[in-house]
Image 1: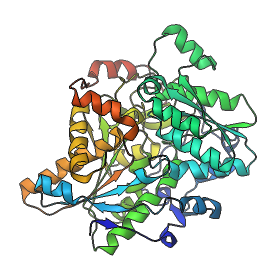
Image 2: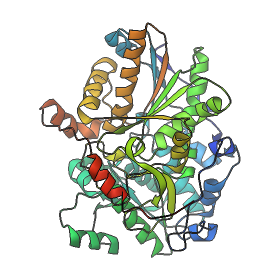
Image 3: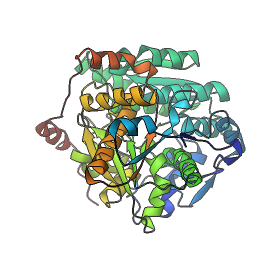
Length: 450
């Protein structure tokens, strides 16, 4: 079967919370001033109580509000495809499936969490949400949700992506979002960085600092994050839950589940429902794919660090390259984050998840092959997962084994065509971040013992 679809009635009505089943939970976030576990009241400065409760919950299933389900129904369930064209091109014995999250209104999986985040904020009387975005997928998704639910959205967009991807900005503005290149002169954090380096390309860590600062300084404004936090990954589990149902319809179960990984939202979304099975004895591999230019899991350290550059957020226990790490301006802007989700980090540390880093040329080579065999132009972020899916399919071919490979096509690349032009014209450069530079950044991490 080429395309596996579910009916609207089969949209999951609950999110799966992996915190109920993890062998070891992540260490708690710490207050940036006291270095003591952060309290719920501390978080209420920038988050609605509903999301704080989800953040700390160890309840296995959390109900999806009816109002959120009604919006989900405009684009969910998303189809699961068998990559028959890609399989034929590779002449592989593997069967490859991909979940097409690019069919959401903002072109990526991010709408799965932007809708509930806007809903919970609106329900608690919040009029404005400040956020950050890298490539623009999250900023677009939140701007869309804000337009639908009547919440103003302010987006700090990493400057290098703001320049590379002008149509993402236009998309956000079309939905009413107000977009500013980060670092900006609107916040103290931004002004300080611009004073040191007026040509700073920006990072997700800096953009987070600016958005958090705006939220903390305005009573009618909250902050929303598109990845990393527990409640964000919780909302994304609709992806993996649908995948399970869809694969059951064709009598399949994956040997390997793959997702690109920046902060961890789409990886967690597709893999957590399957990791439940792994934790309970199922033989399955989960692979996180990151850029060689921002190798957080593969070269970072597992320790406490700020979630942002200016040190405004709590300390999070995660794999990190250092909060002042400045990755190069690669075209997969959504993966340019110095840290990883504490949930993904803990699962990786405990050996339940694997990680691999790949370079830009390799991922665009995979994206071109995918586009020419499956007809879909993927976002550069998603192309990381495609690259490793291809590699695993070729490995199965060499070993003469049948394998079922599932990956998350987290977004489409229609607004990333300048990146494709750079690759096709031979102008795209690979960049492996030097080990000495990573060590230099890691030396400046806060010294917190656990």
